[in-house]
Image (cartoon, rainbow, N blue to C red):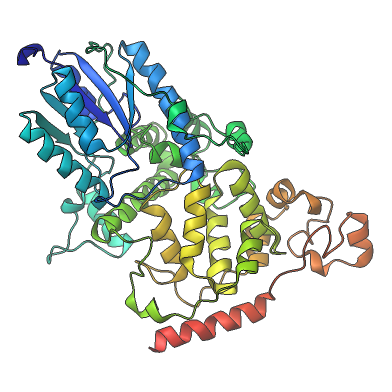
Amino acid sequence: MADRSDAPCIVWFRDDLRLSDHSALHAAAATGRPVICLYVLDETSRRTGARPIGGAARWWLAQSLRALEKRMGDAGVPLVLRNGNAAAIIPELARASGARDVFWNRIAQAPHQAAEDDIATALRERGVHGQTFAGDLLATPDSVRTKEGRGLRVFTPFWRRIQALGAPPDPLPSPRRLRAGPDVASDTIESLCLEPTRPDWAGGLRETWTPGESAAQKRLKDFLNAHLAGYAHDRDRPDRDGTSGLSPHLRFGEISPRQIWHATHFAAAERPALAADADKFLSELGWRDFCRHLLFDVPDLATRNLQPSFDGFSWRHDDEALKAWQRGQTGYPIVDAGMRQLWHTGVMHNRVRMVVASFLVKHLLIDWRAGEQWFWDTLVDADAGNNPANWQWVAGCGADAAPYFRVFNPVLQGEKFDPDGAYVSRWVGELAQLPKKLIHQPWEATPLELASAGVTLGKTYPHPIIDHRKGRERALKAYEKVRGG
């Protein structure tokens, strides 16, 4: 066995697929010893109860691992891939390689913490030292608590507390060069079976995205230079390129929150006129922390109502309506545009996410968990905190929830945030020739206007599956029962 002074150390990568601002990797590199960089696709650990990632996120993961593999090769080390139970694989790799230390960044989620505990115990039993570092949040959950030791359930005071903590630590640089450890066996990315083949439905994802750390850094730079100005307003416009597009990069840790924080503050300091836009952008980063803190306190956030009064809510079981919603065939153009954008690109504009979610849970009275599960499988940025927390927010059963009487009118939402119909025209092409005053409510067009646009309602485009007014009234009655109870 190698002498400890030059024994290799293992860095365990998870949702932190980058070299820069990687505390565990930085610490390993600082030892000057050989480094084994390991990623384990662990879908077997039953005790931890980790949620399997969805199809679109699996595709992203494969591309992200390829990008990381290249970055590591440039730094002088291979990326070792394994498929199986991390609690068995990591101690065995330490034994086989002679490693005496394992470094990793913590993930403040119950399943990941359980896996970490299992691994730390197994390593101790073998005389291997495990060292952990703060994970991918602006602030750890234990740093933002009430006097009673509970997490905060309202965003505004939460965000004030985060800001009161001051700036997060400066990001760490990428190691210029790493010492390669001993040769160890590795699986291939292809063998992990992350990408769809029969059928290959990922064409739109490939067309839309370039995963990886370098692409994330470029996207951040381009956003701050070209789109931060006006962000506070443009972020609500799906017809404009007004958002950062960083969410899937953040989801897989190709970029860290503190890298975004510091780069944004630097941009605002250079151009003081951007202060309000920068504050709004950073508050969205804060919302991500807020949702992750909720998940820390409520591990079953994706399945349990945060407000128990909703446990008896009379959700409707309507497979036909659910399928129409999933396929973008509801007859409401802004809803259908969002659902088709999601299927093609793996993302949906944030404003439209709220509209389509409200439509499912309020107009159709379908359980929010059905929508959350669909998003989990189809979003490349499906996040274990954001996804269920946002669905519960819209449904009214979550933290800092939207008022129960807020039922988005899909026509008015479309007219306000897609006033020229550009977003709908792009994703619901069969309506593209309608006059913009009618594109959000094609049923109001005359027969001549429909014929001129090549639209036949009920054939080329569906009639609305529910009348907005009736759907709203039904929702309010159902929600009043919960509120009254």
